[in-house]
Length: 280
Image 1 (cartoon, one colour):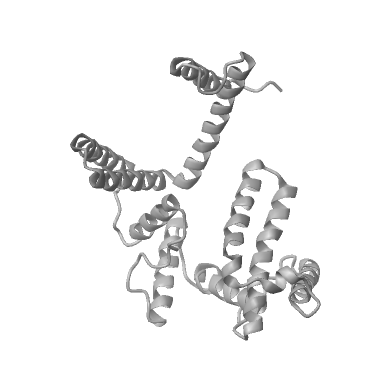
Image 2 (cartoon, rainbow, N blue to C red):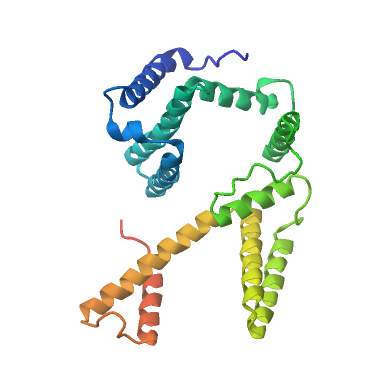
């Protein structure tokens, strides 16, 4: 086993170890006799929604630039890891220490350029090396038949498309530059137009999916996660629409009674306010 890093380790680890021990003890107490009825009723299945919910709340705290909120949400996400590890411990499958050891072992084995003698020139080679090592690990476990393995089906579709095309690119299945990926978007849009003209709903759904998938690939080539780009666009849509509603309310115009032209004018007004520099 690799020796633990020494930079700041002696000063940092006693407090971290105490904090983790306390958290594990609290979780065990909540699940134990005389603990919390709600916590004692939970199963791996019932905890599934909370993992996603807490993950999204971490992302919101990051977007808000709120360190205190980020710390709190990371704690809530960590609780989900500790909670599930406790359930598995009760089954006799594994415990939190096994989880921590496993990820440490994985990080060490997949960074031979840091913890071994391997040499890499840049982050691109790091990713290629990571993918090769991961495939070899899966092969030894009887998997690894496809380079696309390991992308969860439960991921949001745009994020999943991003990860799948990234994995394919690591084995050479990729456009050489963003121009090829962008041309594919135009091709798929043309095919969507043809399906719309034909009134073929099945074809429209198929081609719309291809457009979205090809756009996700463009985002990857640009280094812009498509899921984050869409989240940002949704945020702008909400802000602009609320601006329309508030402007109409000030004039006493009920929702649904304004003309499309007037709402479009207010939409463009909201866009202009976004571009206007904020006063210091």
